[in-house]
Amino acid sequence: MKTLLVFLNSNKAKHLIYKLKRNSFVFIAYFISLLLAIILLFGCSASKIKKSSDSSLYPFSIIKPGEPLAITPFESEDALSNLGGLISDEVTVNLIENVPNIKIIPTSVTRSFLLTSNMTANGIPDFHSIHSLKEGLKCRYLLTGNFYSSIGEIQYTSRYSNRIASGSVTVRLIDCDSATVVWAKHIQDNYQTTSYYTAGSNVKTTYYTDGQLMQELIKRLGENIAEYFYLTK
Image: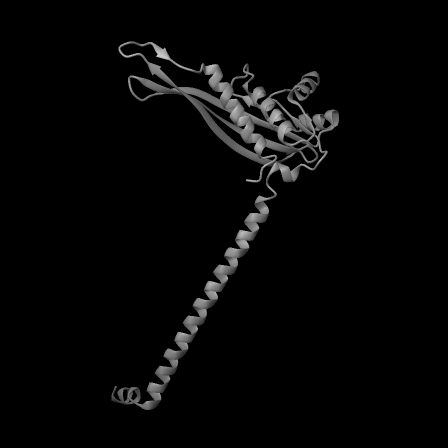
C-alpha cells in the first residue's frame, strides 16, 4: 500500500495520468465531431431521398402524354346509389379542364364495356376485368375507388344547428400492363350549412337540402382527387 502511494505521488505517475486525461479528451472530442458529421450527412441524404421519391408518387409523373386513362364508377356503400359514379364524373370534368393533353376514357364508356362483357361495373376490378379493359378499351391505366358518405346534424343552441355532409374516397391508380396499384390516396372532406330555428317553435330555416349538401361534397372530393394529376403537392 505504501509502495502504491509512493508511485502515485511520483512525477512519472502524474505524467501518465495527465497523458491519459489528455488522450481521453481528444478521443471524446473526436468522437463527438464524428457523430455530428454522421448525423448531418444522414439528415441531408434522407432529405434528398424523400424529395426525389415524393416527386415520383403523383399520377402526373406516372402517366405519360398519350397514355389512355380509363375511369370506372367508384363503389359506394349503397349498391343502388349512383354517388360513386357522380364522383367519377366530377374527376373526369376536372381533369379535362386542367389537363388538356390527357386522354380519358370516361365512366360511361367503361361501365358500358364492363356490363356488355358480363362483368361487375362497380367496385375494385379483378385481374380478369383489368385485362379485359386493357384489351377492349386499349387503356394503359385505370382509376377506381371506394366512396363512403354520411349526413348528420350538430345542435349548438336552441336557435341554430349545422347540417354536415361528410365523405371519404380511397382512390387507386392501376397499371393495366402489370395489374398492380401504382398510386393510391385516401381523401376526405365535408360540406355544411347552418339551419336556424324560430324562437319558441320547431320551425327550421335551412338553405341546402341533403341532396344539395351531398352534391357540393361530391364536387369538392372530385376536385381534390383531380388535383393530384396536375398539381405538385
